[in-house]
Structures are given as C-alpha cells and as structure tokens.
Amino acid sequence: MAAKNVTQVLIGGKIYTLSGYESEDYLQRVAAYLNGKIAEIKTLDGYNRLSPEMRSLLLNLNTADDYFKLKKQADELSDQVAHKDKELFEVKHELISAQMQLETAQKALAALQESEKEEQKRIAVLEAQLKKR
Image (tube, rainbow, N blue to C red; front, side, top):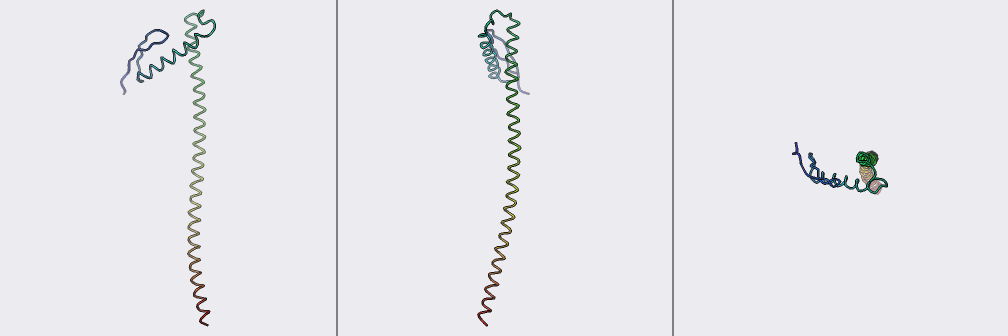
C-alpha cells in the first residue's frame, strides 16, 4: 500500500493539514479548487451578510453542482466511447469478412488462371494436331 502523504494547504485564508494517499500536488490542487469556488461565491450579492453556516452550505452546493455536471459529462463521454467501441467492433468485423471474401476470390482467381493455362495448353496441342492433318 502507498504511504500516506501529509501536507499543509491554504483554504479560505486558513492553513489546514491534509493527509491522504494522493500526492501532495493533488491535495494542493484540491485546495486551489476550493479557493476558486470560495472566490467565486464571494462575488455573489449578499454573501457577506450570510452566516458562516450558510456560506459553507453555499460552497458545498456549488461544489456538488460542479460534481454532478462533470459526472453527467463523464457519463456522456463514456457512452460515446462505448458507442464508438461498438462501431469499431462492427467495422473490424466487416473488415475481417471482406478479407475472407478477398482471400476466397483470390483463390478462385488463381484456380481459374491455372485452369486457363491448362486450357491454353490443350488448345495448343489441339491446334498442333490439326496442323499435322
């Protein structure tokens, strides 16, 4: 198991100690994201009149909103990938089928060419026999 990372981050002007199995860089990016959300909601009218509880709730709601929007986008992309995978499978199947048909046609062509050579030889023999008569 990976070692637990402990790092200090600045969120909303306060220093917090975070720990987790993610990298320190990741934990700093999470803190930066929260700071961005805090800065965003501070611009809303009436933010300064809200209680700390309501400010926290507003931050949580905005973060949850981002999560659900990104989850929906990820799900849609996942569906698109699944659809493209299905299309790719069908195209590969068609390609394999076409290759098999091509091989069959090439074998038939080779057999016909061999048969043509034999017929040409037979014609030459028959023509030679006709000339002798």
